[in-house]
Length: 352
Image 1 (tube, rainbow, N blue to C red):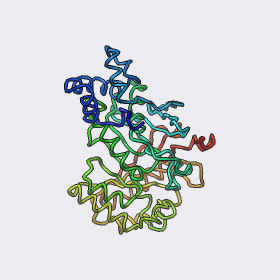
Image 2 (tube, rainbow, N blue to C red):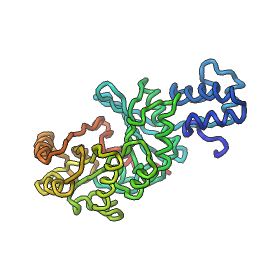
Image 3 (cartoon, rainbow, N blue to C red):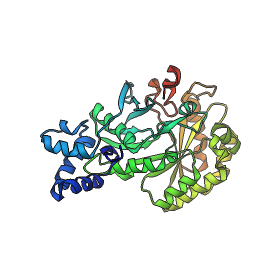
Image 4 (cartoon, rainbow, N blue to C red):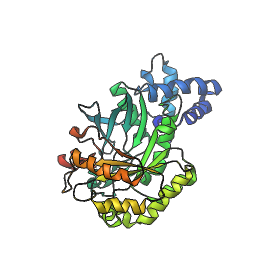
């Protein structure tokens, strides 16, 4: 409802202002902080559940804000401490999120769309097609629920779940802003990462707006013809235009490194031609290359063995830029990079 927005889609300043307009300056300062912390940080589902909340004060908050939550359908936990969450939206669509543990810190990989229109061949989500964009509160609520369910303090957010974040850029930016708000989730702006497949106009808008959240870029392949087959988005935004946007983003960051994500696929993206293409096209970039061994998504693409991946990355390091192999948590639960949505495909596309 437009007159009763979901509190999980609002910044603390916006919540304060709405309460102040109804109940005065003192109410805005005290009640605002209490309800915001109670719902976003402590994970209570209604204002009345917040300890010590008087009924009349809960009624004020209820008159101003919705606390509608996503419906959790399942939680599938992995041996590596990761967990995949499936959520049902109000319209029947289903999204998935992943909790990841690394070096004592907890990251939530969030979805920004139900499904995805880009149809990257190494990603199961693209096989679903696009159902719809998520609202900001639906993105934030993934984090709120996962943190409460797991009983952990979430320190990092990666927009690497279902969907292309820059095709829903305003909701993604608002959700990221809400996640940084005090006294809510209080996640550092430096610890929110947005991954894009290369929506070139949106990359430029992101730069022009001065958004503080870090972008990382899906390269897929440095051979333009291979990238086109793997990532149809290149039909709309050409390879050179994509690299130009990445280069501009590097300049926008003051020459700090940019991160490119590269999918290692047996007999396709791990040849000498791929290495030479990187040498040619990535010359002059200050970059880190994240190599992601393919996680099977139910088509003909083949995942490399660990030995093959190590041999490939050893060759890549000769190009002179840092190369990292990204570990995908939760692969046994189809929670690894590119696997979100595979369980939905195998169960049949969820009804809308």
